[in-house]
Image (cartoon, rainbow, N blue to C red; front, top):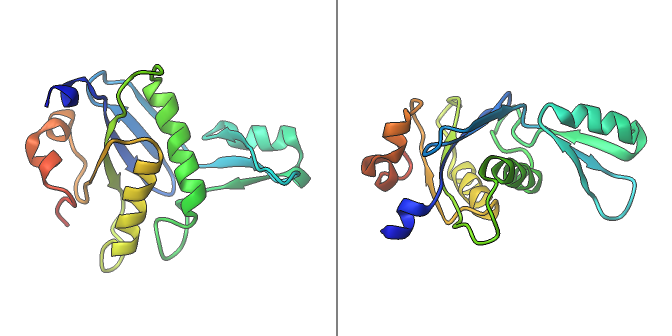
Length: 166
């Protein structure tokens, strides 16, 4: 319990248009377009830029050797590319969290925005949870429903009520 008081608590809202990460304890927030520029010129793909800087980074690299991917833009699903989504989320968490080497891993409340026909599938829910764990989260709560205030994100009800309410 003591460790959870020291851990950062991040509220992550995901949509195809915007990825927002807010540190609930400090109030620090970043919102960007969920795009990742990746070099494609060599066997090892590298991240060139993310968010609003992705397009400029890809242009600087040249169209032939870079690609811009939005892993949360697909007509039938929120997650279109799991691997790129995990890398993008990890990059955002790293910039929002700015942890030192010995800082505890953050707890993350993932909030997919939108309401697809029939709700989010079990596969989408698991993919979002796995992305957050791969991005460095020690614990992930998936919240589906209305947007939450900082007080609600910190409440035991939300942190114990995984999957939210649809």
